Image (cartoon, rainbow, N blue to C red; front, side):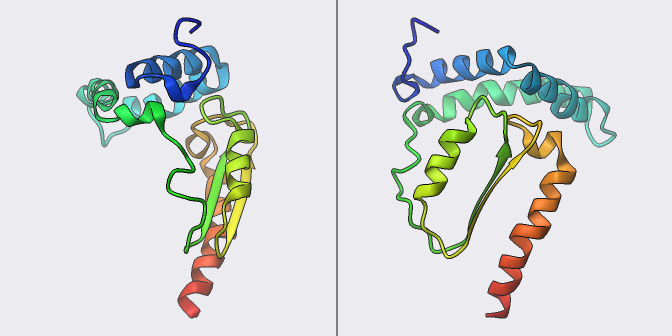
Length: 152
């Protein structure tokens, strides 16, 4: 990590993938969610084969080649003004996209409607870790905004 430097915007795509892997592996909540929820879903799902578990990892490795711009991704490059509703729902203990950084970006956004909510006891995979809480946010925060837009 020290060799890669402290600025995540200066990392190559391969370095960013390594950084994310090390970050996930060092955070017990994120690692547990990845193992039990994400991979567990593939492992035990009657809709997936064991071959697809290997394909998942191959896809993750392949995506590193497709996203070289990820290392220099700038949240604000496309602006912070949106003509449609803007929602951020994430884990309060997210180590990949820390809540403070997400909130700072959210605060800069101008949108006709916007909502920010943290899902407690969740990290980067918040919607998988607590699907009931995520669904509740979708139904109570997103659905009313969309219903109002349809009526208008």
